Length: 612
Image 1 (cartoon, one colour):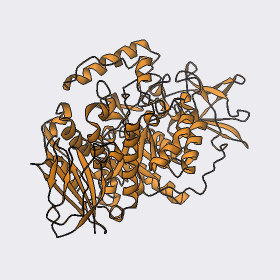
Image 2 (image 1 turned 30 degrees about the vertical axis):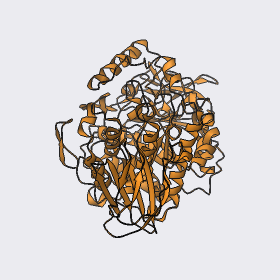
Image 3 (image 1 turned 90 degrees about the horizontal axis):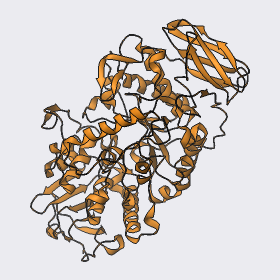
Image 4 (image 1 turned 180 degrees about the vertical axis):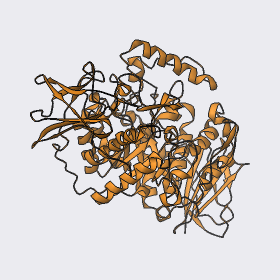
């Protein structure tokens, strides 16, 4: 493994606060303390352009800048706290001061993850970590086992998805800062919930990004959709890699985070002999061995590349899991009929079947949308290593009007889609509010203090939608109303139909947790058949008895279906989404069925049967 060196400010009661910053081209670096009393600490240059110094009387809450060459004053690139925003002084914190109550917590295995993605600013009325804590019992009641928090690295203003973060080590002040995040993680572990944190190692936001003043953090060798790529393989890249390796280890070690979701890893551009992702996995594995527990890395990518998951000894990066967008696209196009933009590569029943059997739909075949061959074969990789969803922040929020599936398909279809996610062999993820059919959209929002930048964001956002046939005008991302409109209403307490949908989700989750066939779920023990004439998907889990037979009627007509199971078997009903208990229109009672005549399905409905 490469070099690994502490950076930023580090406080101990015995020594005070040490300051370390990488500034290889600077001739002079000072730590300028602005409060509680003004003080200048000259830093000493060490190998590779690191500068260090010690302030024995600098305690937590001390605010400081780094000054380069006697004139350029900037916040600490590795600041642990930015209490006054991205342009103001950094703050010393005591990472060891928090009184953790989760010593018995050792995490949960990946195969038990049922993930709930949320945005800390819009999930609750309070718009912060405390608001999330208050609602954890509801998520526990639903059956969630892990929450995934969208990025919390300090960004400009108070409203942002989080992907514009510019201080990767600092927890967003408006959410509750470092103390608030630790309280949230502690509370999750108390409820038996794992915590996944979304981190961004492929680009930095524009406002408040002063990294170029310190060193070659970026390279002109590559470009990303967000500008110059971070420097993972060019001159001096060891120290850029160190910056992000230290960041990942901080979240796991100091904040007790269980897993990291790595944003858009295909934009982490590294042609070196050891890819950054492999080195990251090696350090995370080492930390887990030291702490006698497992930490999980989940990659987001649309490249369909098993190298991310393959073991390091087989030339892979050894990550634990990755998002599988193809399953989302296969479902979305079938239930909505949308075929614009990247959806043009999907929309046929065989895409859904292939996604269930082989994970990647594009596994070395030509993509019309990308105009090139995409992907490789993931059939042999166990299903638990792929995270699937029907909605997430990208697929909802990157629509022009931020519509959820609630606005796009019928109530009965919502239940069918829930089943396609929670009854799949993959690791399921829900997007906040989907479990009860939240009516508010989830829109893209920012609160840049730079008005010119805000204008550019608004204009660029509108250009992004040119490939889609969406009508209307995109809401202004910088408007506070756009943020307010995106907040969850948690209205299922007052709406009977929403409550029934939530109860249906709860039942599916409970079934997934308790049915023996799901304990041994795998693609190898999965029978998949799509009856194109009836528009009915047959999905049979036969890893353990009793076997589970799921029928999904995607048509708007009732259907009478015969079994697609290859052997003679009797089945008995377990759940029917058309029942009035789940807000359905009512369904004929399904009697125990022989091999030949299985059952009748109501329009847009799901039936679960189990073998006798």
